[in-house]
Image 1 (cartoon, protein in one colour):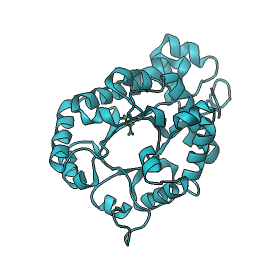
Image 2 (image 1 turned 180 degrees about the horizontal axis):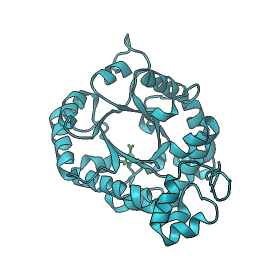
Image 3 (image 1 turned 120 degrees about the vertical axis):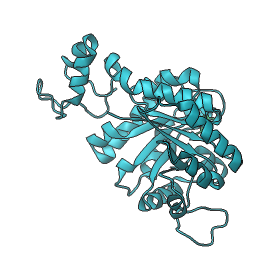
Image 4 (image 1 turned 90 degrees about the horizontal axis):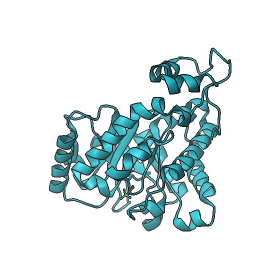
Length: 307
Ligand code: PEP
């Protein structure tokens, strides 16, 4: 079962002092209620140290918004994975659409950055997503497939990677992909991961959704079987809103898999559904049966390309 992950991407917002205040407010707004969900904050590079100190006593992870693919050298304005690791980050966001759109990031440079980040022991949030023009011309799957395959080219350590599906047309625009639209692309990505890395990765890789997530739509998005949390821009700049989104992820970590099992990722043999529908505890037992091969039917519980 996948634990949801919610990360606030503060982008180029907040001074160091403002970042410290916001991080403190997030911790306070969360209280004790988010243990069912991984949480991260990605302030500007300048504030990583100070925010890291604020987060020390919490379970919130420090996240960087990007990193370069060289350790050191003549790359004015850049920050390396080695530096990010040294300052205490556990995750780094790579390939955000704003990096691709405004700073010439390509799948090839994304791939180099991921490799270097992994070498430095960082976990990576790889962002992918189609533009509105691409969606409207029917090439969403081609674009996403290329971004995932080329971004991950030559990388074996999929366990250290979270993928963020962020339709570019939904980022900062107030437009959100419908939960069904998003889930369809998430399943598509999951299927590619399965092809590249095998069935355990198909089941276990976490795929966040990003694009105008807010308290009012978070619960519906996070209830979808293939949506494992969110990468949150605008709404993460408000502590109360961000905390509400995290709470939505914490709740949906447990409930929908068992109470709404007809939408679950891996439909079990026919007997699994009636059991799951009529008795949530039976579904929970079903989930924790150690072997992926059902002892009732002898068929694998998950197959690729399940829709
Ligand atoms: C983002 O920048 O990753 C993002 C999803 O932004 P927003 O939530 O503001 O759409």
